[in-house]
Length: 328
Ligand code: SF4
Image (cartoon, rainbow, N blue to C red; front, side, top):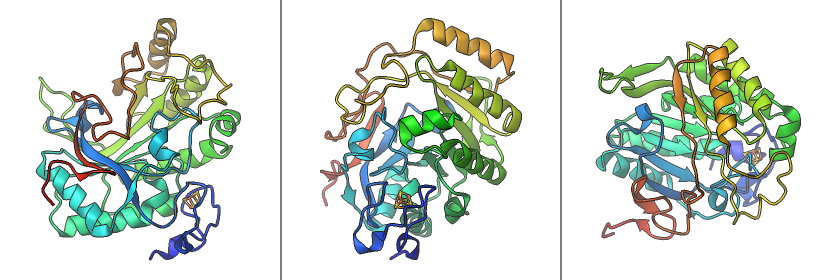
C-alpha cells in the first residue's frame, strides 16, 4: 500500500481521492496498478526503437484524458488487468529477453508509486536495459522524483501552451504551467547521451536524455508555434524535439464527440509545409519530423492481442491473454 494514494495528489489534478480505499480518482483508477498491453514497438523515434524495438508497457487509466486520444479504450474506457509488483517486474524482464532496447512505460503518471516499486524489483532481478518514461507531461516534479535512479530517458508530450485550448481538450487549464515545470525537471535530470552512433545510423541508441513530443493539431498551427518558440528558448541544445503530424480522428471513441476546437480531420500538406518553415525560423534542427499519414487504418484496437499492425509491433502480454504464447 502506498501512502501517496490515501488522499491522492500524485498529479496536478490534486483531486484528493482515497484510492487505497478502492475509490477511483479523476484518472479513473484506484490504487491497483493495471496494465493493458506490453510488447515490442517499432514505431518510436529511431534512437528509441533501435534494432530490437522499444519494450512498451501501456498502463491503464490516464490523468489527462484528451478528447482525441487514440488509445481511449485503455486511457478512458478501463481495459486492463491489475498486476502485482512481481508481475510488472516479470513483464519488464520478458521484454528484455525478447530483445527490447529499453522498457518504455506509456502513460503511467497516475500510478508512479506502484510503477516505481515494480521497476525497482525488476532492476533487483537483473533488468539491465534503460527505462523510458513516455507521458503527457501533466505531472508534478514531486511525483516524478519517485523515479530517480530508475528512469534515464524522458519522452513527454508538450501538447499545448494555450490554457484555453487545454481547458477545452483536457479540462485542465493548468496543463501548460504544469507541463513546462515537468519538462524543465526532466531536462535537468537527463543529459542527452546517444550511444553507438555511426555514419549509417546517426541516431545511435538513446540511454539518457529528453525527447519532447508535440502532436500538431489541424488548423491550430498558431498553438504549435507557441510550443516551438518555448522549446527554442528553453530546451534547444539540451533536448530533442519530435514533431508528430499523425493527428487522426478516432471515429469509434465516445470521448471524441465534443471536439470543437479544430476540424476533426487529418493534417493537410499545406499545413505540413508551413510547419517546416516554422522549424527553420526557430532554428530547431535536432530531432524528428514525422511524415504525414494518409489514412486511419493504423489506429490501435486493444481488444486484440495484437492492437497494432504486425509490422509495427510484436505482442508479449495482453490484458485478456496474459503472456502470449507462453505456457504458464
Ligand atoms: S493521479 Fe488520479 S487520483 Fe491522483 S490526483 Fe491525479 S487524477 Fe486524482
